Length: 116
Image (cartoon, rainbow, N blue to C red; front, side, top):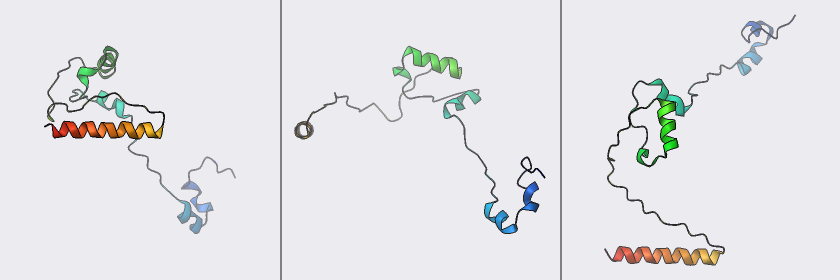
């Protein structure tokens, strides 16, 4: 008798109750989706990104073409002005150089803070 194509429930009569209760499982797969495709399911998309103003023309093209967003409106941040200070990254070849650079950065920050 060939049973390969029968479901686990159809074969339950040929399996001992102990083995059945130990091995019978129902796998429910849920929550699997592509997050990037989520906006495509809606008629109106608001609040796509906080970096809209800094996007390149290629990135804006992707947003317009892939997500059918035709009009872009810039709104001020509810968090106020950006307070990120952009600085170049220091790369040191030795641990001693790293420590000296780090100490210099700390001293400069302390002096700047004391000046306020």
